[in-house]
Structures are given as structure tokens and as C-alpha cells.
Length: 93
Image (cartoon, rainbow, N blue to C red; front, side, top):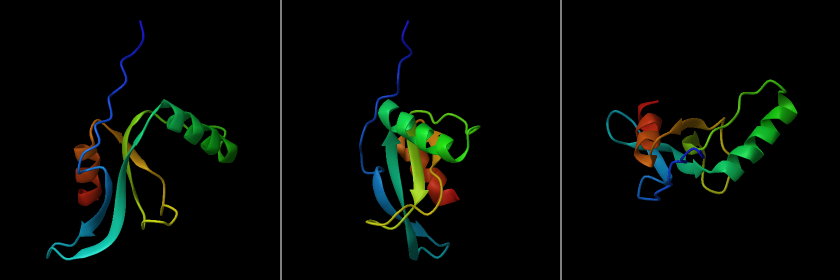
């Protein structure tokens, strides 16, 4: 029996957002995105090129710090079960 993959539901949590300081002021940005099976396979191949023992990348929602139009600043964090969960994790980090 095939395993059910989580369905990506793109909502207002997906996309670019600003980090918020304790006083509510915005600084930096992050992106919330969904990685499907094809994206995960490509990520695994890229990771294994640098580290043959890299763990597999799974389907799901991720976030990473980045500026729109630029390369991400660090590895994607996740997977999370929803875009909201990824967004909340980014805001809490």
C-alpha cells in the first residue's frame, strides 16, 4: 500500500515573511515553502555530493532565512506538517 503524502495547501503562511523583534519591529526575512518528492530527491542528491552520509530529505513544509531574489542563508529547517507550523517555528527561532 502506498504511503499517503501530505497535501500542500498554499496559503498566506507560504512565501516570504519578516522576522519580528520583541518590540514588533521587522528585521531580516525568511521563506516558508513546500518540498515535494521531486524537490526532496534533488536535495538529497545535492546533499550527498557534499556529504555521502547525509540523512534523507523528506517531503513537507520547510523554512529558511533568506532575502527574496538571493540564495538562502543556511539549510532549510523542517519538515513540518503545515505551512503554519513552519512559519511559527521560524518566528520562534
